[in-house]
Length: 215
Image (cartoon, rainbow, N blue to C red; front, side, top):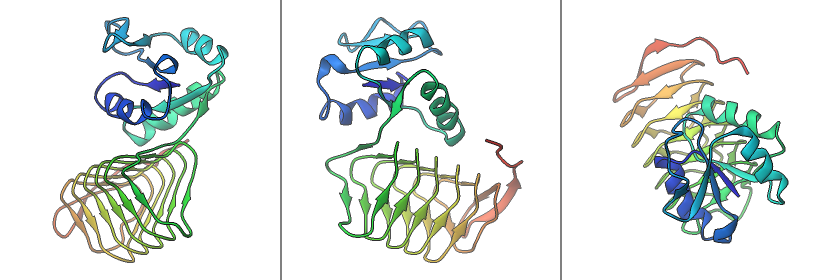
């Protein structure tokens, strides 16, 4: 399995991967920090070129995981590695508690340690649910969203595609957050927010509007 990225978050992901994959089948990819040593932790090879990644996939294991944050960054990397034969997969921590009924977790999702997901929850393609998050019943998390550590999503909440919820933020029940939006760390969202919004505070207030994200 290839972990895309070789720095902070990718190294957190490694802890989950080593529990599911043989050590000799794990490698990292980093074309940004090209000075990274040949082996991470003196064990896992670090690849630096697309051709190296293609060769890795062709060797018999085409699986990869996005070990980087940022919805748009993850989306672009997904497209890049699909084109060279990669097969995006999900990674779910064994310590995560996931409801038995009505839960739909799509491909490429990360669910990190300590997270609790109740019943009747949908988590969209490529999304990242970080450490110690909670997601209540009937919540719908869009594709390539990012829930930072300690986020609490109440029941019947909808979060649009490519949105980021900052660390420790709380979203109360029945709220809809539009696509390509950012909620600041520690904020409490008490009213619906449109697409392309940056909202912060308690209660969260819109302080900026972004241009729409074009896929």
